[in-house]
Length: 430
Image 1 (cartoon, rainbow, N blue to C red):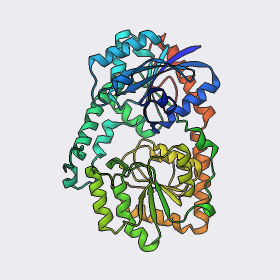
Image 2: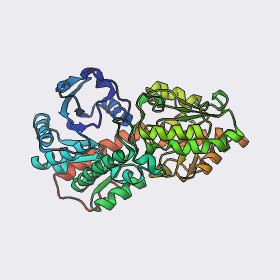
Image 3: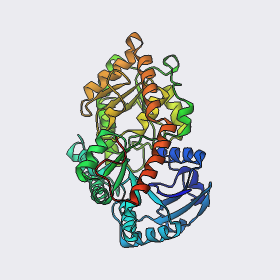
Image 4: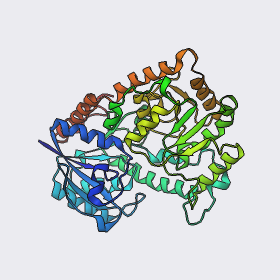
């Protein structure tokens, strides 16, 4: 049985209790893939987690997997100490292959340097999640200058957040340049990776969502949804584009005064300490008289997210940049009619008028227009969008296909590692 070491970008939710930390509901695709691989029992997977509190660091075994931890002092930079930690983990785990989930954190680059020192760089593959080297260009999109540099107590400014992305982006480019194998899922991430490293072997493989979304596939029904209810999955930093939706709201409310936005995640506008982005959102809410039209509903687990998708009349992804929005994938699988900004790899998820509506991210007027189209539901539009979205997404996130694809990629890389490197993209066709 082949032995794979996964470097995860978070402590997976099912391991949070092991470290006495709060569950992190991000990166559900990692948990989804692990869950399916466990059913196949064809490979042995060890897990490697970032730990920020050094006192919580430990190695052990849980849920049938060995796990290792490293001390993550920063996601922007790495040092030789971190590289040495990874070398020690590699010596203990002795994997046949290393799979890095995401290159947007500095510790991915540190792991690559450890693999290089061990002479096993040709047995490493990384999955593209986001790409901060590209995101940084869009980080402050259409945020007024006064808010970009605004200081709010001791909290990070928007400009400082952008600069942190720039640091991460430099590590990311270094990582992509070192990698020989990479997994992606959209034309956009292929284009970005190819621009950095034209000779890299690119493998296409879509994600697996958490089980609850498959269990509720196609469950959204127009007759059961709450009319004029907009659901947004997160809005804690500018890239997610809530400010565009707030700018679109006066147009929507003029026609549908009962419209209400429900936003998952921390209520940043009522926090005791308000980040500068929250100050900008508050200004938009007050200017457009939206106080009775916006509600933050807190951090949600997978089951609660399903409930929100089912209740919503429309799901909106207003990001200034995305690779492939995981929340959009979830909404489409449940069947919620969706409107999304045409950025990054979103066009690989839907076609305007078929599975949903795409619009240029900086056009709130068009965003409003499409939301109103969904609300109007002329000639059963919502049912059409819902059915098409479920059909499209069920194919993209098919468990059997994506698990087999992942195992095939692993086998191909291990076979290649014992031979000379193939020509560009020879390994697996896109």
